[in-house]
Structure formats: C-alpha cells, structure tokens
Image 1 (tube, rainbow, N blue to C red):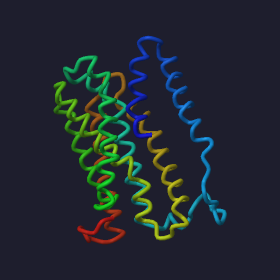
Image 2: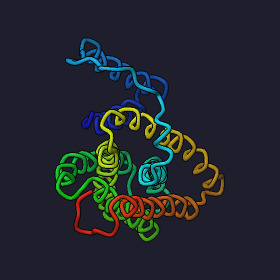
Image 3: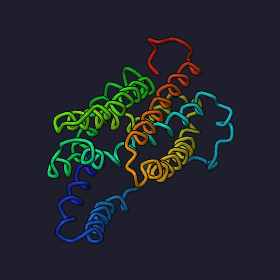
Image 4: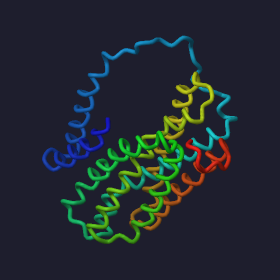
Length: 253
C-alpha cells in the first residue's frame, strides 16, 4: 500500500507517452487488480461477537470526535488539491523542466512513505492528533510558500517536505479516532463514518479547485483555497484536542 503511491505515478508517467491515456489507465487498473487478488484468500481469525450498527448516532454528540472529522475533511481537501495540481503549477509558475515535473508526484509519494513510517512511529509517543495538527500546520506553510517558489530546486524541496507532512497526516486518522473513542466496540463504526465524511470532502474539492483555477489559470486563488483549508484543519484539530483533554499541552493525544 505504501509503495503503490510511488509505483502508480511512475507507471502512468512512463506508459502515457507510449500507449496513450486510455491504456496507461488500464495498465494501472490491471496492476491494482493483480495485487488485490492476494487479499481475497485472507480471512479474519476471529468473528464479530455481535452485529453492529452502520452509524453510531451517539458520535454526533461527541464534540471532540466531530471536530476531528471536520478537521480531517478540511485537511484531506487541502492536501489533495495541492497534490493534484502540483505538477501543473510547477510547469506554469517555475523554471522546472518537463522531465523533472514528470517525477514531482513520485517525489511527493516517496516523501509520503517517509512520513507514514518514520513520523507515524513517533506519533505513538507524541500522540496521533498532536502529530496530525503539527503536520497540518507544516502543510499550510508549504502550500502558501508555493507562491514564492520559482526555481526547480525550490519546487523539489517543497515536494519532499509536502510529501512527508501529507503522508503523516493521511496515515493517522484511524489512530486519532481510537484516541477519541471511549468505547472500543464503536471504533470500527466510527472509522467508517469518518471515511465517509472525508471521502465526500475529497470528492467535492476537485471540482471546486478546477472552477477556481478556471480558464484564466488563477493559481493564486487555487493556492489560497488549499492553504485556507489546511489552516482551518490545523485550528480545528487543535480545538478538538482541547475539547478532549483541555490545555494539557504536554499530554500525548
């Protein structure tokens, strides 16, 4: 799963020129299908002891959890907008070569691997919500810093750092849900609810970003849109933490 983020962009980039968009997409689909076949024989060692509801209605009155969801929605929206338009932005606003731009998404995903593994490990000690809040803040700074980047070296540095921060953020939602869930039996249901929320957010972020960019290439508006989303995510995640344990800044959460 971790390496897929690096492999798929590489496959698409280097097959696009040879076989076109349609077959480049089909090649990735065949790779996903082939690797997914290994999952089919897998079975759980234990069976659920009781049936569970699809929705935990009590969660809607759990303020820290709902704030976490809102922060995650804004965070996913902002991160996906930057990732989606990163290569196009680099070509439009920097002196990056086509060859380098083709590898920017690979660089971001390589950084994401570092973030998920290394900083994900340290999140056990610092607290997943603390780490996510910090990474949302870092991603906010990096998103706004794109407005000042005009060189190939600069855009590569931003790609690496953004990959690390985004990978860490995107890899910790489940751990954060566990931190905020007092009833272990409801964790699975809450994970499903959160994924629904962030999925809707990510889905609507693309058309909104495309409309902002428009035919006039409004890159300033696009960067401000993603930066404001990430800033809102940082603030809301911090409030979620305070709502759960107060201002105990040294306590992991």
